[in-house]
Length: 131
Image (cartoon, rainbow, N blue to C red):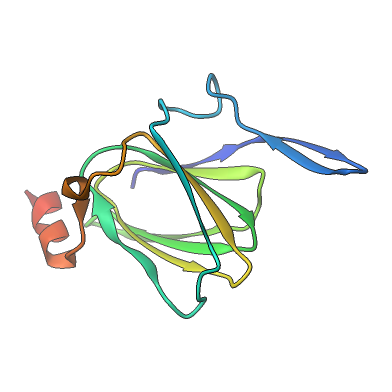
């Protein structure tokens, strides 16, 4: 399983929480794409795909997200519910997300969007990882 937690620098003050991510140190890859998911229906499973190449760093800046990762050998569930902790995941892992209604999931990716980089069929994913 290619997944590990990254603790981010957080500063709590009377005016709120400031969380920083430094390119040199916190983000273990050059960022090519940034996006976020919000206003998700909590009953709908998102993702349901794998990336052939590239890394991602996920931070749930608000609410919570349950992420299920499957590398073709084992499945592990991660709960993202802190804005000061990111999950770094590598390629060739089947991703499924359940987000709370108030969730904001921020994703930093090492690859630009390319549909040819996605596997959205679970049987094809298993063929690729068994390859």
